Image (cartoon, rainbow, N blue to C red; front, side, top):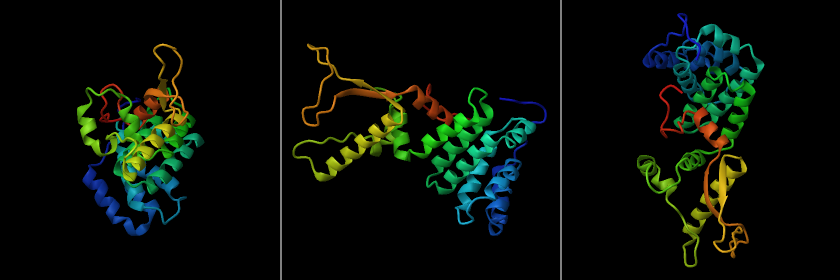
Length: 253
């Protein structure tokens, strides 16, 4: 993080909200510009967006981003806005924010953009690659990706209880209801999608006697003993503000 005496001074959230409301009738560009400092820069990009986009969502994203760049040098941020790689990343983030349904998704997007400004080890084009991957995931898949950070039964109780409706294991078996089989199929599709994107690693099941991979007789597929989050998956989670050591959101990430 780059800090000096000229770091950004943030306005109170209530002031940001009040300014946003005052500008609703003026369209996306003026509304995003109501957010201190970062909003005026975002407004230039927001002005290129479809005017029918969800203005309130873009404004919330701008406010979240403003909070996450606390302490960064203004000149450093202004320089980033002159970088085509960063503005390309930002424009895509704005589009995703405008179409996002959940507040959590806008938090993820704000964290990803802020980390692109704040992380010298990750280039803007690399952040854009992570943004593309994030755009391919729904909110349920993000919960599952976070789950596989600690896939064992013990521990992680609070997270499991909070998302029990998503994480409840479903099984396909003889005599199971159609609803149960459908839910099992969806859970399997989430895991397969995360694996196909390189976000999960899978560990195959080996026969005790043969020491060879086992096959599911019903499907003909190789049996998977368990999945866990891959290095790319952990990087994505950190980038969107989910800490892989304490399994909680970073306060300012």
